[in-house]
Amino acid sequence: MSERNLTLLTDLYELTMMQGYFKNKTNEMVVFDAFYRKNPSGGGYAIACGLDQVIDYIKNLHFEKEDIDYLRSVGLFEEDFLDYLANFRFSGDIYAIPEGTVVFPREPLVKVVAPIMEAQLVETAILNIINHQSLIATKAARVCYAAKGDGIMEFGLRRAQGPDAGVLGARAAVIGGCIGTSCVLTGQLYNVPVKGTHAHSWIMSFPDEYTAFKKYSELYPQACILLVDTYDTLKSGVPNAIKVFKEMRAAGIPLTFYGIRLDSGDLAYLSKKARKMLDAEGFTDAVISASSDLDEYLIDSLKSQGAAITSWGVGTNLITSKDCPAFGGVYKLAAVMNEETGEFIPKIKLSENTEKITNPGNKTVYRIYEKESGKIKADLISLVDDKFDETKDLRIFDPIETWKKTTLKAGEYTMRELLVKVFDKGECVYESPAVMDIRDYCLREQDTLWEETRRLVNPHEVYVDLSDNLYKIKKALLDTFDSTK
Image 1 (spheres, rainbow, N blue to C red):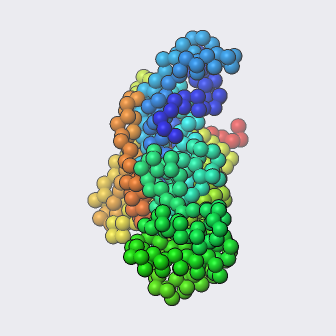
Image 2: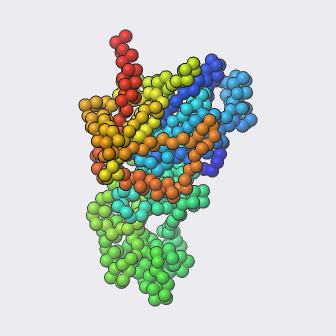
Image 3: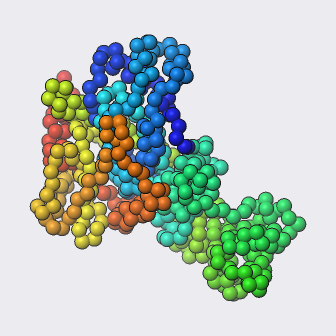
């Protein structure tokens, strides 16, 4: 969760392959791409997240003596290879799409350009980090979109799959749009707002509900959100909360942030009834917060029913991305350098499943915006040497259904390269922004999406096209294989 040596956070076959390269004196420069094939939760986009932890991982990548001793005990590795590992340091280049950026399937989120032994070793950890946080950030973005501007608090720590998933998942959730988290350690490590009220046990520990509310209001008058469903929401909880608010008002205590929380029952019905009760007593600005196994679909439904809820606490379904518990990112070899010419030779992985055929070569990604609206028109994966001129027309086409094509007129579009350099010859050259700054950037990124792409069900697909040169290389490689042979 803080800086740690995670060198052995890898699959065994990364190390066995490394030894194979070592024994065969094969350590040529290669390009690997980390990307994903399908948007999570049936959505129209994803949010890139986890780069800061990848940076920490690479910076601390080295084998301690106890690591070498353990690998020796496995019985698979020879002494000359273990000697090599003892002095191992990452010396390659890494490019990545910055955290908080809206991303789409098949485009490289992280690109590693390094000797193959080094590039092979870092595969598992990069995927582990990027897959998890991108998944949770994406889920958070969907939940926040459903809330239509209401605040979403993440409070799933107790349901997360372990401490790392809880702490870093909360970080990702804030980046995706949550206003804060209940996880105090995330607040400490990443300087994000921590929020919370009290549990039913607080109410039950006092002789009666009113006394529990009264004592809480005395402790936290500037953050007095009272949980009203311990006994009877409308007959007991809300009336007792109103009684306490009246006493605070009579005592001259400023009611700056106060209200009630609902954690069970028919949230639409109860919130509307509670709103009328609060308004009738002059507490028109009282917050009505809700929790209880919420997700984006339930929030969307409650909003459509006119629920009077203005703040939402989302736990299990967010921190675990319950409906889609894995991001599905992969890490594939895309090019190998010719040592004589210094040029990268494109490599391609074939599959009977079209979506699993990789894009070859040393690539980058451009985002194309409609100039008038600032909305995303398409993304374009290209070779790093491809050049584009916004003063000229640009023809783009679907690389699979090639008859789907369009021409963007000069002056009507703009382009932005997404991949930035993070490591240069093993040295970090990128400084990660603060989490709350990444959150602000992520919100701006989501505003570049068309509403049709953000909708929760059956969203419009944003096209990810290939440049002419990349398409020609891919087609030529495909044409060299004859499945009838």
